[in-house]
Length: 271
Ligand SMILES: NC(=O)c1ccc[n+]([C@@H]2O[C@H](COP(=O)([O-])OP(=O)(O)OC[C@H]3O[C@@H](n4cnc5c(N)ncnc54)[C@H](OP(=O)(O)O)[C@@H]3O)[C@@H](O)[C@H]2O)c1
Image (cartoon, rainbow, N blue to C red; front, side):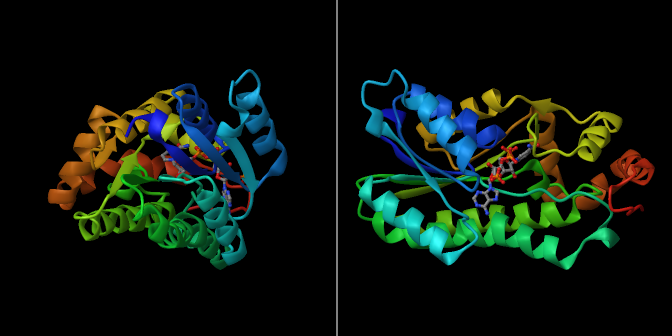
């Protein structure tokens, strides 16, 4: 779909990638409902986009927590009022560290934000999206959702769930007007990555992209209508190879284990 025809609901809009996607799609002519939890950055972003725009109603902001039923109901109401035809599930939280350090509250928050919220927002918006001539649901995943890396076991599980959800939904809606898409970035230079993740990525020579580059990829995916896209040539091949022969890659993670063991975590956890 061309951004000019898109009325987009974007979650996590004030985050590192979300704000880059918002700027890109707004420049390209999309209407945007920016959804986020922290009021100040969200309203600042909405104002910065609308300044100088001929039609200021093209952008609006909604401060909600997408892990709550009330928050999601507010998004669905606002999306209806704006004739939304695109949902970009981008909000997420991170989790990194040795598996034995995982706390139950953090695990619940991870799954509520990264899996339950996108599924329930999609479920709530589908009745409306199915009435549009064309509509798209674009889920932001991760290379880690296809390639399990030491230190990211819980986060990888959440993104793998989102990936397979996207695949099943795409097949379920194949004869409808709703296209389901999945974008898997590799590391992105945003505040999502804690100092420990940054040190780990440096130690393991993991490549990263700017949020602007990934936002461009998201825009291209939206316009192409293709089913999925992986950022990074090497990561895309590794993710696909891992899907076919996971044991082949098991030997490639010694340096990741070493890097994880060498890190000190604020809560004192270590491998
Ligand atoms: N950064 C990476 O290395 C990387 C790599 C691959 C994939 N990704 C994926 O890219 C997407 C964007 O990540 P990012 O790097 O832009 O992270 P980010 O800068 O931390 O942004 C995440 C955004 O999600 C919002 N959010 C979190 N929980 C929420 C909730 N319950 N309700 C509403 N909003 C909520 C956050 O709002 P608050 O600020 O209020 O918490 C924040 O604005 C995520 O899906 C992430 O998994 C990131």
